Length: 247
Image (cartoon, rainbow, N blue to C red; front, side, top):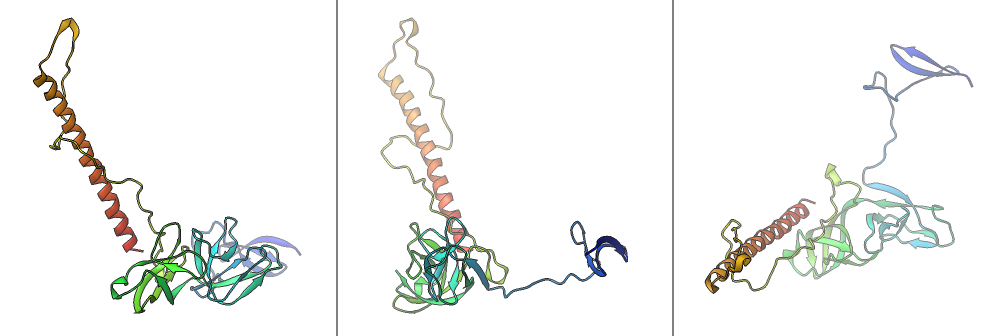
């Protein structure tokens, strides 16, 4: 096969023995049609791990190598398997599993009990166990309708993208910082106070009142710092709640 570069209507193209193909790399805009390969937006496929079976309806996660497996707590959730794939005797990648990566699914979710659970985040601890408990589990979606008992409808979404163009953010983990507690007689007043220096140089001595006045200022400063720290902890918690509500 002979390959040469030619210009067609000002567009650089390859001439492959008479077959003209535009060179798309480096072009800022198209000047000719560029047919694409498309798929349905709610499906995806992944290579499977070795020696395992993924059953229809299983929540599917990715292992550290990017291979699909029956979800293990902490995996990146990529969807629900559309059909059974038996790779029990195969090597990694020998089979590919097709998943539904977003949609609405009816599930039994531990912790669900009433209409008030609508809007709650749902996690998976394995390929068939779903819960409202975050812990080290994998976020899969949010309850949109309660049915009965622990059964509800969950709008699920893989972490690779969202239905209708929404981006699915992974649940923001709870902050490790917690509010400061304990007993301190100081008072926060919105500013740090200068404690002053009590020097014993030259044989100086100080009354209890003078020493206690410095101690009081130190306690006030500690109270002020604690108040600021606790306000930051509260702000982080509020931001986390707002971000997770937007998932």
